[in-house]
Image (spheres, one colour):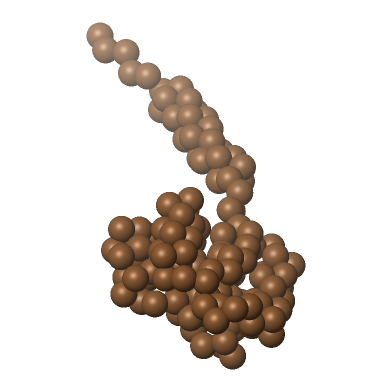
Length: 137
């Protein structure tokens, strides 16, 4: 004599387990937060301070911060400072570095090779605000 288990006895616990598993994934996803973009603007002023360029960079950084991004400005005066600053920022995990007046062979290419997850863009002064806004997205 064989005893057969009713399908209802097996199906109900299986359905309950499936619902709990799906709910666990949904609650996990809701608890995750999106990290804001971290952006740095590096402006090189080798011949002394260029107030208009620094003001333009400050305005771009302020706009990125207002949009919710973490942004900061660094002003350099030599190629050695450029390399030091870009390397430091990439090592700190910044998502993007937007530079004006950076020497690619000194401060951009070596850092890009070592930190491929950090985007480094060099732009003209007139394109600074647009480049920072794009990086902040």
